[in-house]
Length: 398
Image 1 (cartoon, rainbow, N blue to C red):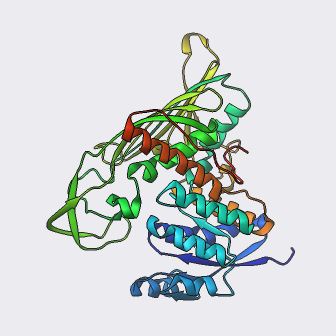
Image 2 (cartoon, helix red, strand yellow):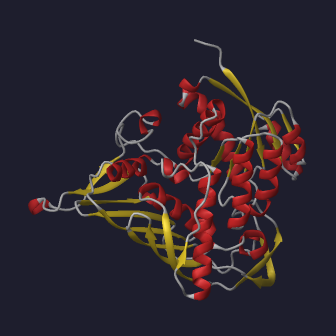
Image 3 (cartoon, one colour):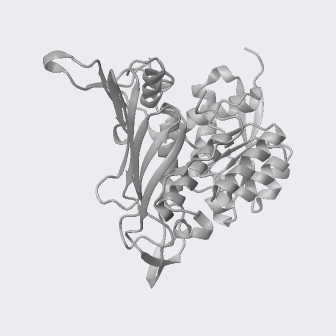
């Protein structure tokens, strides 16, 4: 065997997603041995003392910094993960670009389309590859659904339905966090969840050209935390409440460049569905539908007349679907959410090693942000809005 290539990693912000990035980097050598890379966890950056102690004591980083600028200046750090809250994405991403570090950033990339444009254009100008956390793309069932579409197995596409409904914020006693702040999060559920839905729709069907939308805020105030937590847990609340400044529900009608029409809907306060993320694609000769809550399954109907048993067939993930065979030895054995991040990490690493943009890119994130921007504008004035085109190395259309 040839000598493995060393790649030094820095992770900025070690909340839930930063730790998931860390685990994903560790797993790449096992699941993608052909990359021939030795990933070294060089440095983490986090402002919390106890988290920095965990970084070196439990997570395997060589060192930890309170200031992310020190991490970016570390000569042993070759690539960077940005897993901070959304309102810090722009400043950190631009600093990483200035330092010449390829970066893997979570979505939404900025709190506005303008911020996303700045990041994407800066990365393109610097000639840096990037990765964005559109992890649902990598689900084997989604990859197979996309193949069915591209091979024409569903006939001429007619319409698509995307449904991203969750309950993680359904309790009115859930704390008021930065996600409810227009300044820190921008819009609400639109970039939080529906940006995933818009990216999946574009990845499978094509570019969204125009949108008509309505939004609403069903829970208008929440208790102010007396103790901060990490991610969605660990908070303590008191009696004082504050205003929720952005939407927690959105419904959209969309038109695609290729003439397909669709409906997209998302909520983060619906009681019942835990994470019901559904994609349905319909054509003149068949259809397919997927639900994240059963992510290893795909319902498929091919042909318009299947006789007495016509209808959906439930298929299980198998070696013909995406990267499934790297993770499981037998059909019926399931992959999980974390596995999608390992695939994403591998795409990012391969992009960094080869200079070829393989992972979902900063330009993809900018494109999704323009859909978000048109959605918010449409909800404000009740009119159809065109989605601005983006420049750069998008991958959803490759």
